[in-house]
Image 1 (cartoon, rainbow, N blue to C red):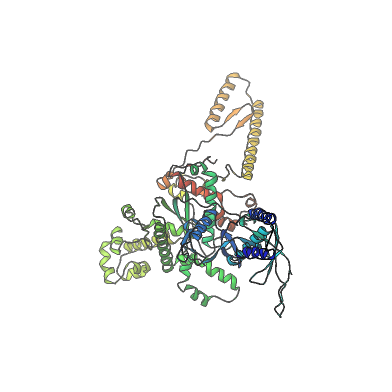
Image 2: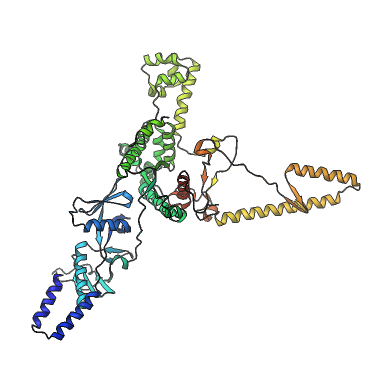
Length: 615
């Protein structure tokens, strides 16, 4: 504004006694030109390092508005903290920094952005600094107000910006090897486009997330620090999973959202790999690792060895303790930041993470009263939840008379688990009790530390054979190539049955008996046989038997509903299932079908169903 005043002052000094007509004419022009100027609307961005490059990402519209309101409040911004991204990040307004709340992550810079220039290697726009954006905005206002363009500015990096007109503004970057005499840079190098306001650049800005949280899901990762083929962390993969869920809520639960029946589901990652490998185990591994094929050996140490760590009683305890304590910590922090939360909590595991959660759940105390009485903790037992003493275990085995022998030898549960048959024999334990003890502790180890996950339903209903439940496509029905395959299979079966029916009728015509009474008897007998076999004939066409499968109940687990589900294969995966095996194991994070299954299972317990049931 000072530049405008000084410019007007110079004009008045050049013509000290303007005529009334010229003065009013100048005022009219000034008013008309000034009416063309519209203050720029700022939008807040944060900087993230992606593939070793700085990428500026816009906050969603609601978060940006909250940040702008806090900025315009006039209060001291140094101690002002604004929660963003559904409460998962906090922005310290005075520091202009963005910090993660629930997990460890490098803090990112925050900027109030009004002016942008196009980057060198891609088409993404980069915001100018706040101070230089103010200079650009002031120069732009002056140019619009006075209708004087081709304004030239020099950035702090000695780069030239020229405002030719409101539609054409360029940024010149000087060629490498500047003048050693320190001369002023000229418009050299390739010009870059300059844009004013976020509405003039191509960037996706989301509306924001619903404030109401209906359910909380903890997601536990599998082996290694990377969770997909792009080697992304559990935090990044869960962010994708959450984004997909928000999109599906808008498309498949639209009526419930419009009626404000539901809000959203919050997904929080649980990281156990970093605490495990921070115990010093990596140093020991490095000492015994050979120097050849270094990258492959490092990958093996960082990922595959996690399976063997979980087989180890020492490190298995560390892993289970970490997962349990981390979920309790996250839940406590979540309730502190969301005191009005009344929803339920679920846990989801990927790969080895599902086995870790299975072990934790199967070893919880069966005391719902304790869980309900504590409002600030999930009450997940640290370790395996095996709180029974050695005396209680021996009592279960009806071997209480041998407790004094173990007590005399200073043998507790951990020591007894390491004992061999020969050790028990030397303590004077007879053969029968020895076998019971060895089998008891072996079965407990095997059931908890098996690193391979399989189907659950055949173990729950062992007498019935059935396929796992095929997850419907999120757009309904089956994938086209699956329907085509089933249609061709059904067509081939119909052709086969029709051909056999025609041959059967032709054979009957050749072998038909000449006596009517005998023919009637044979026809009746054949009809009875066909009826017993479950097939029926219509002319020359033989229809296959119709089998009606009764609904499968899997007992009390999951309320009697199905447990095992399988994704539909993609068309390219049908060519060679072995080729896409690894990809199939890591595809769940961005799978709409998987996310929709989770949302459907969560909300149907609350009486909320899909707008249109999937077939």
